[in-house]
Image 1 (cartoon, rainbow, N blue to C red):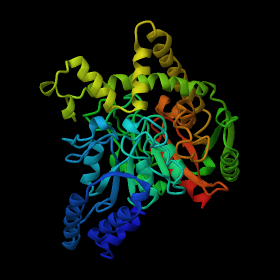
Image 2: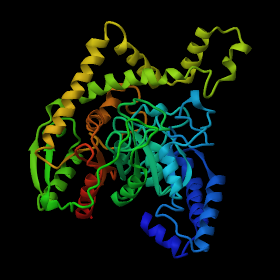
Image 3: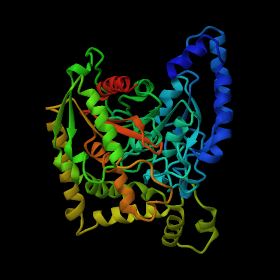
Image 4: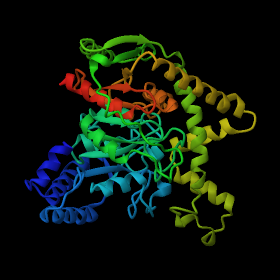
Length: 473
């Protein structure tokens, strides 16, 4: 879609202003039901559109993303816009600088339509944990769109933006992409700068794109990837352009631990259909990743520990102070201020994870839980490294079930956490992974398939995913 829109703009078949206007009209018509956007960037979007139209009128060259509308998950900072992380504690916070990914996209001329809804501080798998409202699945308004980047996935699927940015800590790009029937890509850890992303779990967080095709995701990734001096964990991404990726030259691993009891039959059958198609081109090999069965409990120790540390900064004094709880205007001491502000400012799921994280880091439990989880993490990393000596890519389900009903799992945290059972191991090991849509259930709900590549094979993985996308048409 990006290349086609770019061609229309430079051929003057449509103006950027008209394109942006069409997308805002779509938002105003559809988002009352879907609740994808927390706030819009209408005034600045039209101002930028006019500037790019003027460049085109003068015959100046514009980049491939010039004038292309996109949405941003509301935990990524955009200077001058509210960035709430879907939390009451940041309800009035206005970002004072841009995230690095925003600077890179702005340099290319992409236009921000607005900030999208998420589970509060990216903690959730359904976008039901937002402090503001529940986002709904475009396929069925009674179902969740997945999370935590549900608003971004819905914005793309509903054509309220051409592409969107999300963040993925345990599956938060791939799972909503699967639930909404679009492409969602989690890059290798460090392939994209995290500078300007509101931290949830710093050793797991990754920013990545949503789009309707792998080609569009690849275009966005090329723009946002690379080393950033403001993020010490970032690095350059190896280029595979000199290596032709052909299905005939690939060995595909099917990890048996991902096809287990509890996987929905329709998802399993649809993925097996795809594997049978790939068999005509590539060598298919069953592999084993036994340590990945420990990935989910490992994740739910490491992630809350990092959450408890990262969210300590939200004390009710900085960022978005609540005037009701300011020391000069009340009899509260500092201890009471913290308790009242954080107790009322954070939602239930955020409080649950902070408490859990504080517990596993506390004296007497650090060795038993956090230290042991880090050892298991190393085993999972080693296991992925070993299996990628045998195969080029892995194919797995993205989710164990199709999109579930709103409210179906909200009273059972463990059931909700199991939504990420097939995605967390990629975050634990830092490897890149992508969801591509592969069909629908009998109830007309989308099914996604996950493709996982070795660490730092991002561009190779995207090239392979494009080939798979072609044989599914």
